[in-house]
Length: 540
Image 1 (cartoon, helix red, strand yellow):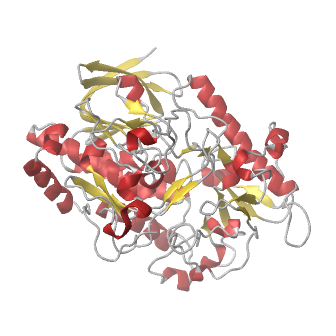
Image 2 (image 1 turned 180 degrees about the vertical axis):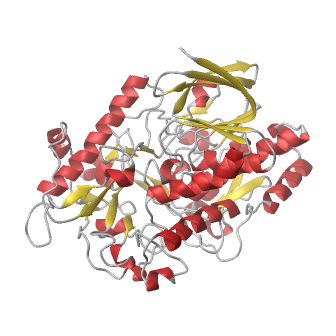
Image 3 (image 1 turned 45 degrees about the vertical axis):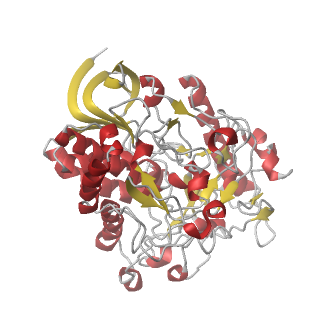
């Protein structure tokens, strides 16, 4: 087997949003970075997982980093430069190409991929960022409380590469470096005895993990495009999980996340709605009444007639949440089999929609629904990767609990303010059904901060969290897992690694001393990272 040995200042494992942000931040400050990715596309939940950005209502004005804003502006710029927009759409300063109700910037994943690649390009050309693609971490060597090297194996041919690095950022979707390096971590629910959280169980439930989902995109056109009956269709068609109160999950019916009452959604393809009238504001409405519009990523009426024969609808709905079992800390073949079953669930939902779903005209089935594998970048028409809502989480210097962000707990006092804040974020505490049989946990939150201590493991001195694996709990993961927050986490981690390389300080020394924190925060502010919420943000 071929083996390569490399050395770098910073190794970033995982090129999702957090990983890309970390690499950009560190390379811009002069660090030599190696960035790795397992899947064909970089970008994680925004691209290979095909999830339109879940963002707070003020995203167009404040509350994200300057680099995240460059990403958003770049996506809009591609549409304005390359797509045949209508005059009205082209003049729309806050262009939402999909006019989806979930986000102010619903778009095709491939567009975001191109912008991310463009952002990395100058650093790759200069040799500051080296990409190792289609690899996953398989081993790590340590010396006391430091990671010395990480071994990566190609998912294509098994070729191994060992990277020795001064600092390491785990930006994988599920915290893959934590068990490999012996870093202490948590999975599932912590106990209320440990965290004091009102929504936590009395006893810890480490195997109780949020659902994952395999998303897909469809259009609705003339003809019959019904797929072959999925192998597991009969099982999934009959599946009635506890939170569904006797209703089949493969249906238009699901619990309302905020009330838990059973709610029947509608589904009307290509409704001819006024795309510019869509109000994508989760603080006002979840926006999922008509599932076609909820996560739509291309609204054909915003483009020249005939450019799109149909809208493109992104399916990421309760009916494809996979919570039979989790994929953390199980043998690889077991985890892969569970993700394959999640793909069967998604295909089963599509097949039901094509053949059995009730229509508004009293008929049955939408055979005109057609998968868009070209949009997903995967032959079967589903997303390249599963959308993991929950990761392993480090035992951190600072753990953010429900009591730090919940509006019910904090009230008008607002979220906990941290002296070592390295960023901000906002989203409801939004937990999907989990593998222990729990239903939704949906709790209003307050605009919150990201403490530097949440990026630091209690013991390991050169490993940083760069994704959903930071020091949250099962509960607060529900609001720290979204796109702009993940980006901010990764960007802060990349800045910290570069700061430590330049100053000779370790991350824990920086976090422990107020003057060091202030120095680092000055650098973050100069780079366009917001550390405190301005006036105008509110709980929801």
